[in-house]
Length: 124
Image 1 (tube, rainbow, N blue to C red):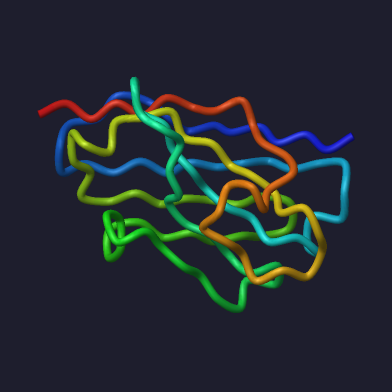
Image 2: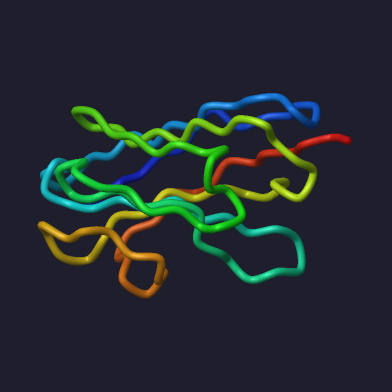
């Protein structure tokens, strides 16, 4: 059984930084691309960032490009968020792709497993 557990969310002022982490267990973590998504109240879950199964490449939503950085290590995927804006306020979820050796995807339906989410609130 795959488990994904996010941490690192919280309340921060606009312009500040947060680092989210997602600890994965249950499958060979290093074989799967990972993604970060977010969902604000009343809105659909949207893509934030994704990273290749071996970390070779990353891809970002235009809204976070240049401010957020996704990375991975042994059994974790991280999202470094800088220059945060009030519109970044949302619950952030990590996700693991359905099949191994993928390049990552901005499409949530390509992901089989999701964490419970961590709240990020950016005050103005």
